[in-house]
Length: 308
Image 1 (cartoon, helix red, strand yellow):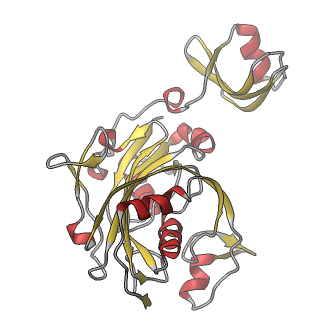
Image 2 (spheres, helix red, strand yellow):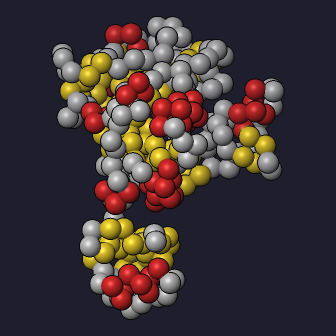
């Protein structure tokens, strides 16, 4: 019943990876904790069999990315799927200018999702409407961007680093080589390391960074290097899914642990609200086994999900 971090290859959808996992593991019960676009690669966390119960607790995990933002060209999908529908000359940019713009995106904010996204409005998927030539009125969503670090400005995406040191995920001469989509042209490109909260679209960030610099922009490449406690350096290849061990549910949940006695475990499994002074979300265990995920208000515990 493992939780497995997979290195999603280029062009596959997250659903494609789930289908491969179902075949490799011999089960229909496979879910994932956060979609990756087809033109993005990197960490996709899969939950298999009974581990699908923990998906809801992992969807809010923060995530790290390497993002290649090409300036001077906009696309309807906001990424390298294209086609280029808008271009503009890019003025010379200094690192100081770009860093100042990136700093303006840090913290809590409202972000308008891409039209080509799986968001539903009135029962309609935004991407389906967009592919039919329409557009939905997508309300801005509350997100948090924790860190944005400029790793360089390059004359075109082809000249930007593609090899990274897998401990820090910074450019290096040897290490992990990433695969990016075919470039849509030779456009000035920013390489940015980003740490963001749940629900953040890096395609929208690319659009908005371009707008702040006064030019259209698109996401020329994206690699997700971390989801919660899962790092790309530890992710398994798609072809190795069948034999992957992964992590048990308890190890996958990144919350403080309450070690229960028999009475507390029994009460929680019965749905009761026993007294407890702690506040926040906790994992409750008994003799090392997972009992429940609970929320504490400083006085009592409330069961969010219990395990038999």
